[in-house]
Length: 323
Ligand code: NAP
Image 1 (cartoon, rainbow, N blue to C red):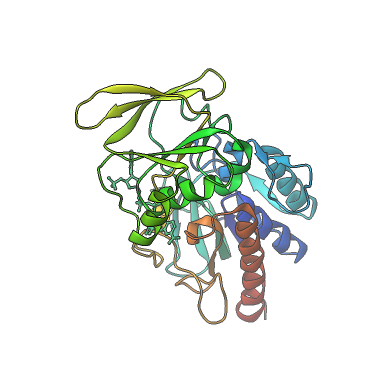
Image 2 (cartoon, rainbow, N blue to C red):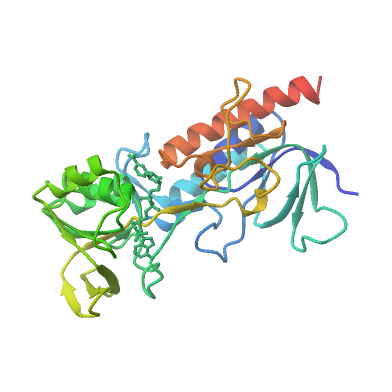
């Protein structure tokens, strides 16, 4: 019989590890199930493990490398008594308490862990084009976050892929830095809202490429260009750019929660009720970070919501379990 923990935190990006720091300091001895290093999309440490320099996290005026920042979060959580395990959760049951968590075989008769409260911080992943060298060039010209990386492309010629609000918004934002922004869309009309389209298409720094897709990313160690393919004629052409922003949508990592917790139409965990910003549809289960946020998606906002989840969990445990 497994012992019942106070709090299990699933996910180890900025949200999960901030929740770990706060719940550890509240003497709740949290267990953080970090995930396994095998996956590129939902790996331990989250999306910051896929970035290089982070310049917008407060407190680091000189900037900090994404993986170093996450190691600091982790060290801080462990210092206050959080336990971390590089294990990937395969199933949760939240129908009754204590909640149950499986690692490994999801059909095993007994859960691996039980907990009075759960904090879900499994994050989200950017959809990628699926090109062979795309992942190794992330942080070296390929980016999924204009807010984070736009600054590095001051005076450059760059490309944004996608035709939705994200792509159009990012292309417009990137004109603050880049001299020219190529907007590459696979069809001949954008999906983005009309007002955002108008703003982007009237911006003289933005060059739209209709019916175009990226067939290849060029560059050895750093992006030097892309090969575009016309989706109608199949004709190929070279485009010399130093940056490629992939903005074709995000997916929250919520497969584990389907039919167990309320998700919105886009699959994000629904949070916020009874005066608790991070409460999910089940009492005692809290959600924080990108798994429940499709708007801000920043390390600092994820971190802030991790703090809220820890405080919500602590107060809920005090009122319902430890009282
Ligand atoms: P989205 O609306 O799903 O758009 C994704 C875009 O990427 C589409 O244009 C799609 O092309 C294209 N795409 C998908 N897979 C592709 C592939 N493999 N290769 C090339 N292109 C591909 O995603 P989003 O723009 O991230 O927006 C998500 C949600 O957030 C939307 O509801 C959006 O309105 C909202 N959002 C709002 C704002 C705002 O209001 N400020 C800002 C950002 C996002 P097709 O058009 O051909 O399918």
